[in-house]
Structures are given as structure tokens and as C-alpha cells.
Image 1 (cartoon, rainbow, N blue to C red):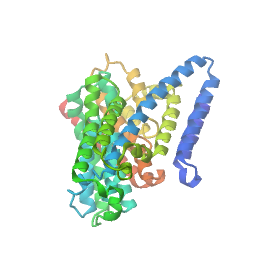
Image 2: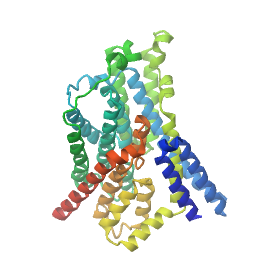
Image 3: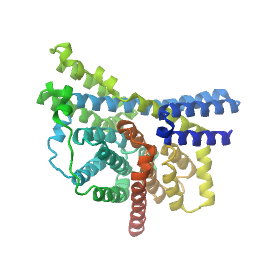
Image 4: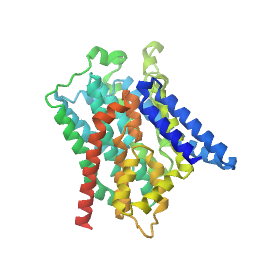
Length: 428
């Protein structure tokens, strides 16, 4: 059974990577892969009640991420419909792509630590569509946004789901992770950013034509633009606060905020004729979000869940511990493996494998794991939630990312590792 599951997962992964040559949408492949993997697991296991329970657990985790993604994407669409991003784009005056890339990289890095890497990626890529007309330019920016968002999320307890897991589990504390991983994460972003901006040196920013950029948004007033922009960003920023105060999952906060934004939008446009407010409503925004990307998300997360429930990932972690032995190398490998499979079950397996009695909070193992698991997913486009979102929003080809961005992400990954190890040896 285990061999069959591994083979099917590898074939499904390859088919996703070869989406364009095969001319089969990656969402279809992900759903077929998930269906086959769970079917084999169910037929090979005698305890069908257990399999159904495990599927329910996986579905609950997947649904939380999907609801969060839908909520964040809808909020961004509502802000966009009101031309709210003009609040930011009107203040960016640079005409050089390289200068714009440095600005975008740093904004993404710090915004990701406050929001999270997934939400930040959605917001920043939506913003780039307002600033850049050429799709090739936006692809490079999307790659840097993914790297910067993952790097920014790694040093914040609320910036990345794996760092949050370690924080909630007691393996890391807030100030210690921020002090310990910040510099390594910064280097992880700066190195690819410096190389990419050098490649783009001398090139001018080509903005979308105003008539195209405004489109349906021409009838919104400056007050409406600013109100919906501030409310949208405010709701996204309040989600981590909501989670900390209530201890409810983030999707509940984003749905609560979405309801508030919906109500405000209805009241704001209540006196307008239907034909004038139709394109500004949240109902239309729900129709505009990319459901294909969301379906892909469901398929890939359910497929990876079978590797967790069959203990393939736990076995991999145990084998690495016995074969390699050295913590720094093991965690580095775990980070690189997270570019292929979801980093959440990998970190969960590691949390169960290493005792907190042997490895107390804020020890080298846990901090280094937060960095590697958080940033290693940038190496491949489907290695992180931020990458998957970017892939759907900008229609990024898997192999384009491998050729143009993966090498940069890998260099940044190892540069950050070197900085963290040197820093740790100096101060510990």
C-alpha cells in the first residue's frame, strides 16, 4: 500500500508540474490524485471507521485554509472593485523596475509578519496588477513576493502556519523567535532580491493604461476608495489579533470581517441604482475569485494528508534522524523537502519525534526548524500556500518558476542558514 501511495503521489506531482505540456489543468490532476490516494488507503485498511475519521480531520484542516483563502481573496476583490489600491499606487512614483522591486520586497517582508504569508501574497500580487502592465515583469515580481512573504512569515509567530504551530506548541516564544530568526529571514529575502533587481536593472516600469486600469471603477468616489481600502486592510490586519484574543481559527476571523465589509458596502451604496452598484457588491466579488485555484488547493492538501495519516512523513523524519544524525543537516533537509510536500505535516511529525525535555523551548532545533520549514517552501512554486496562491493568481508555469526563481530561492535559503548558524554560535 505504502509503495502504491508514494508512486501515485509522485505521478500526480509530476502531472501538476507538466500541466502545460500535458494540457491538463493542475486542479483536475490534484483532485484525481487525492481521490486515488484516499481510495487506495481506504481499501487497504481494515478499519474503515478510522479512515473516515482521519478524512474528516484532514477535511476540517483543509476547509479552514480554503475558507480563509476565499475570504481573503473576496476582500481583495471588493477593495479592487472600488479602485482602493489607487490609495497606494498613486503614491509610488518610481519609474525603475529594480527600485520598485526593492520596495515591494521589503513591504511584503514586513507585511507578512503582521498578516501572514498567504494573505500578504494575495494583496501584493493584486497590487502588482495595478502597477505593471507586462505579464513577464509581474511574474518576476510574483516570484520575489513569494520568497519575501515566506521569509517574513518565518520570524513572526503569526506570519507562517508552521511558526504558529511551534509557537502554540510551546517550542518557541514570541521575542526569542523574532530575535533569533529575523536576520536569517532578512538575508533569505535580500539575496534573491539583489540578484533579481540586478537582472532587471535599467528597465522601466510599464504601467497599465488608465482606461484599462479604471474600467468599472470610474464611478467610485475618493471617499469610497479610501473607506473600502482601509476597511479591507484593517480586517486583514485584525485577523491575527482576533485569533490571539479568541483562540478561534483564522478563518472565523476572516469570515466575520467579510460579513462586516459586506454590510458596510450594502449601506454605502444603498441609494444607488442597481446598475450603478452591481459591480461594487460583494456578491460580484465572490463570482470574481479564482475558484480553480481554490479547487487545486483542496486537491493538493487532501493528497498530502494521506502521506501524513499513513505515517510516511513520520517514517521519513525517523529515517533522517537515524541515517544523518546531525540536527542542522536534518532540519535543512526537512526544509528542502517542504518544497515538495506540505510543511505542516513535516513539522507536526518533527514535533512528535523530538521531546521538549531533551530540546527545551527556544533551543537551536526549534528556531532553526521555524526558519527552514518557513522558507524552504519557496524553492518550488507549490511548496507553500503563498506559492500556490501566486500560481493561481498570475498563472505561473511550474517550470518557469523552476528556471527563473527556484535557484534564487535556494541561494537565499542557504545564505539564511549560514547567517543563523553563525549568529547562534556567536551568541549561544
